[in-house]
Image (cartoon, rainbow, N blue to C red; front, side):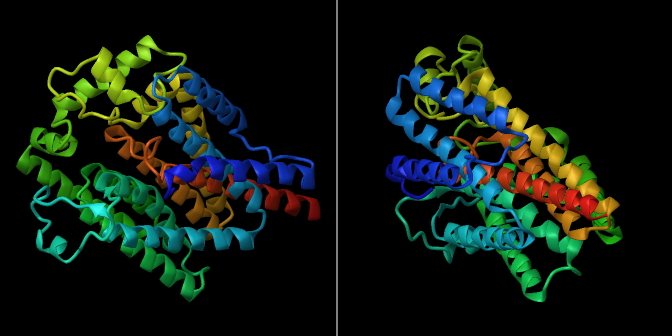
Length: 394
C-alpha cells in the first residue's frame, strides 16, 4: 500500500505463503461463496495485461488487484476462531484511526468548498510528507471502515469490554473528524446514508435521531431547492458540475461498448479518452478516471470483470444481511453488529462509488475493500460452523 515499487515482491511473498499453506494443509485455501467470481476477475486481470497499451501503468494496478485478492483469502483462512475475529475487529479499528491520523498530515486539503467549514481548522494542520494523498481517496477509504467500527458498540455495547468500547469510540471519532475535514461531498453522502441505515436498524433513540435528521434535510431541500443541492453534490474541481460528469461517464460507456470483452487496460482511461474519445468541455489530460466506480471497473476489466466484481458485491451484501438477521433471531447482539456493519460498509462503498472511483485500481488503499470482503466471508463461515457444531452437540 505504501511503496509501489515493492508490489511485485509483495505478490511473490503472497504466492509463497499460499504454496506453503497448500503443502501444510493439503489445500491452498478454504472454499468461499465468491470463488468463481474471483476466478473470473483474476482471468480478466491477466487479459488486461495482454490488452493494455500502457504496461507501465497497468502492471502496478494488476499487482494491487491480485494482492487485494490475496488479502481476502488471508483473512478468510486466518479468522478461524472467535478470539481471532475479536482481535481482527480491534485491529481494524486501530488501523482505521492510524490511517486517519496519518491523513491529517498527508492529505491535500482544500478550503472554501463548504461554507460552514472554517479555514481556521486547516491553518493548524501542516503537510509533513511530499507524497500527498487526495482528500477524496481518504474519504472513500474511511467511509467503508467507519460503519464497521461504529456498528459493534452501537448494537453490542453490553457484550464488549470497557477497553474495547473506548477503542471503538476513539477510532470512530478520529475517522469521522478527518472525514469531515476532507470536505468530500461524496464521502459525506456515503457516510450519511450508511449512518442512516445503522440508525434505522438500531434502537428507539437512534430512530428518533434519524427522524429529526430527515426533517432537517427536508426543510433544507425546500429552502434551497433540489437543483442547487444536486449541483453542489456532483461538483468537482476536475470535471465541474453535472455536465462534466455526464461527459466523463459517456466516454466510459463508449469504451465499454467498443471493448466489452477485454477493457482498455487498467489505468488507461485518460490516454484512451484523450486519444479516441476527446472531451468537448473538459481539458486534455485532466480526467484520469471515470469518476464512477462501476464504470471504471467495466472500463478496466471489460464487462466480464464488472460482472465478477458485482457478483462478489452482491454475495457480501447477502451474507452481511443474513448475519444481521441470524443475530436478531438468536438475540446475538455481536452478530447483529458485525452483520449490519459489513452491510453498511458496502452501502457506503456503492454510494461513494456513484461519484468517484477511489476504492479501485490506481489508489494505494484499494486492497482494503478486499480485506473487508474477506472479513464478511470469515464472519459468515465462522457463524455457520458454530451453528453446525451446536446441531451436532444437540
